[in-house]
Length: 585
Image (cartoon, rainbow, N blue to C red):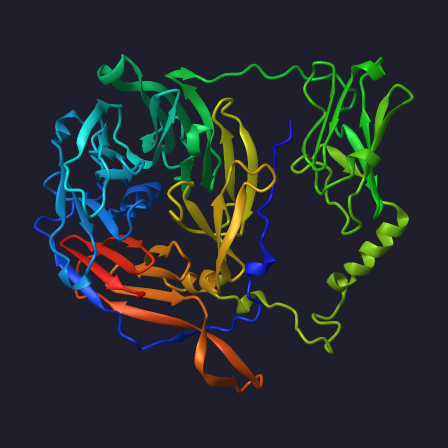
């Protein structure tokens, strides 16, 4: 079966092709400093945690957690095993962080190297806490916010094996059963990995609910554990609302391997016997239609054919055998005008009517390479003309052109992309199989951020020089990743910051921000109309909008451990201080 590939659809209305650059603003950013009573519970990497995956998962961990349900409220864990909160109402009277919960941690019970404590705000009234030794605690927080001074109450606490950090969590209620979904990340030794780093990455999806007992006596317990394995720390991993699935973005793909401790093994579907099965189909096309000829086993009749065609998907199978073609089409078709017939009892001929005339298809079903494309003479001639410049003797056979050929030696470091091609995958919660796969290619992952607490975290990818923000919306059939905002030239700008540690943006998209390992914070604002008349002397035109860049230097020598943004403020956490930067009024 072909992988269910799809693509990210860019909203062109959110792009600004006329964007020029950011203008450095010398306007000062009001900065407020809160000194901490005890240091942040930072855990430095041990000698045994030497891989890049250890650095990405634990060395670059964001120790500061923002509350999406209550504005300008952040949380962190200190070295005294306390969960502390700072909620800002007035910048000039910040006060001290207040204790919300304290716990006991016993490193001697740890099955491996102790990790940093991690916190995930599950809902408006619940949170999940890991102490870094392998224990998961679920906390009822009541309604958080400036008016809530109630201490958090532990409702579930259990050791779950090797140490982990919490990547994501959420809560939902169905038939009066309160369920909490938690996603845990581990970097584990893998003796079978003799050619790599010797470690593998696991994502464990745990479901906890209170389905046992009656009324006030209901107790929380683990109901299901599902294990995913991969070879790289995911850039992004989150559970869908209602626990209907999981979305993972990573350099190397993940697959589900266990359910409740038992290996997940499915017998492969019986393969059809087709003589010389490579290729199993031939296809050709015009600007109006695509014709596919699928080879069939001898003796196949019309009643054996199982054919399903929608606007953008095709499924062909014979009887109960594995599908011959199954997946998303390269482009939409008109199902009503498309047909299929059996030719000479040996092949199935499918005629697909393109919904709109346009560029030629490069494949029939996305990701399926089992077919052979037959090109007619006219198409061969057109292709040779288009590619003729590649075989010219001169580097630039047409010097009159405005744009000279690209010189690879002129590319800057920030134009380069990782060699590994990352993937974005959506897994169904029931079947644990991928339903959507996007090859991110050169779209470098930049950061993830909570925009709306009722939805999954959004993520930001580099597209050319820009940074595009994508919001997962699994309930939308055709476009489950929606382009919701653009930060002009941020993809290029961030790549030039060699000391960058964290990146984020405001939930209302008014600015994006980068933070270096030490001191410096960069703020990039969206273009705003200017009060005075400005002219671009080079192009001789009036400038109507200006995008400002601002730089803040923090008064500390401690490395930055946490970085979060709200619509009005930036929060920067170091080992001994919490800085609050007033970005917007």
